[in-house]
Length: 253
Image (cartoon, rainbow, N blue to C red; front, side, top):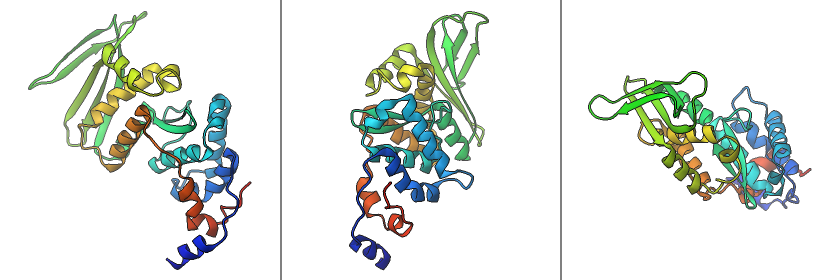
């Protein structure tokens, strides 16, 4: 407590105003919460690479970008559209963290409660049939060659206890989920539609499974990102955090 009070009574250094400076300030925290093999500098470099692919991120409140990065790091997910685990999506002046379907699958395995999980797209030329009831089942034989237009997606999980569960979404439900997203016209929904459709099926499936705290947290976080209610501005927390001052993280850049 005394360390914290000393930090709060210490005159604060000027707050960084740019994303590179904010990332530099956050490196001690990112390092503290990163997996042992992760390099905080590499994480920061990946974030800056994302700004080149999407310059609108530089127009966001830099603290909201850093907040999204910290959230992703806490979940053990890597930022980067090429990885499909987690995306930084600008919305107005703030950055939101959207979790990709690969990120959802990785978190499911880490929970130790899911033995396997898959997500598939269904096209009009595929053979596809599914049934609910006492003996739920899915039959899916993808067409060879031209599979036709996307008509549905499904996600299936096998628990370590042996149970199998699945969720099927038709195209109308996928489009409804897209329209409900605040980023329906840009970001992953625009650039990675099929992946977002599969992620939506996985997310809905996971809401009904005993998947553990971290995955439940990720599902809730991702829903907030879709609705536009996710808040990643951690400026006050960063400025008042004693660890930053003790580690020299408030230097600015």
